Length: 43
Image 1 (cartoon, rainbow, N blue to C red):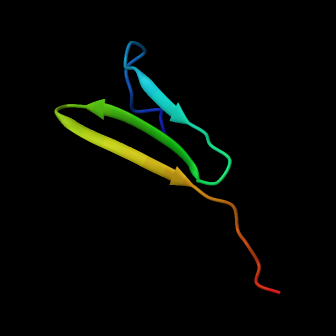
Image 2 (tube, one colour):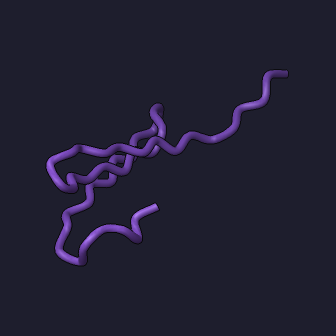
């Protein structure tokens, strides 16, 4: 996911208890954000 970034590109990782993991960065004038959430099975 992050292999296209230059080595000096800042990457933000936001991790909280009740929200999905967020990885964000800025590249070529565009802001990108990836959200990684666990699979929750309804019982």
